[in-house]
Amino acid sequence: MTDGEMHEILRCDEPARAHLVAGFLDSHGIPAEVVGDQNFWADGSMVPKDMRPTVRVPAEYAEQATGLLAELEANRRLGEPWTCPRCEDFVPPAFVECPVCGALRPPRRSDA
Image (cartoon, rainbow, N blue to C red):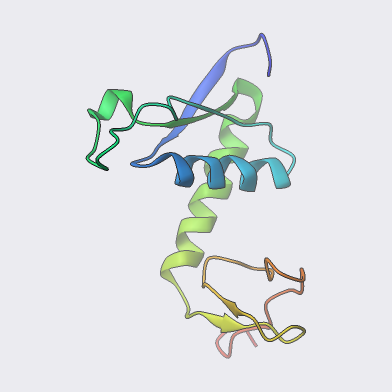
């Protein structure tokens, strides 16, 4: 990805989560890479923590990426799943836009 200094911003228990986070960051203009995603046991058991999949970003994006992940985590903890007003798909609370059609989440009653 880059020859510059990379910062680890997240260590995940499974490769899928690491790739989802990297995709989320990329969709916000932050180049991200996943390393260690080949490190998992075939039986599904966890590998040692220092071998788990890691999401890294260039140093100049580390602060922005950390802030986005904190916001994503706060949104995941707050609120409830919602129904997309356009396609009526079920959407988890962490999403601010529908992953199917891209419609924005309507304001929550507490947001209005």
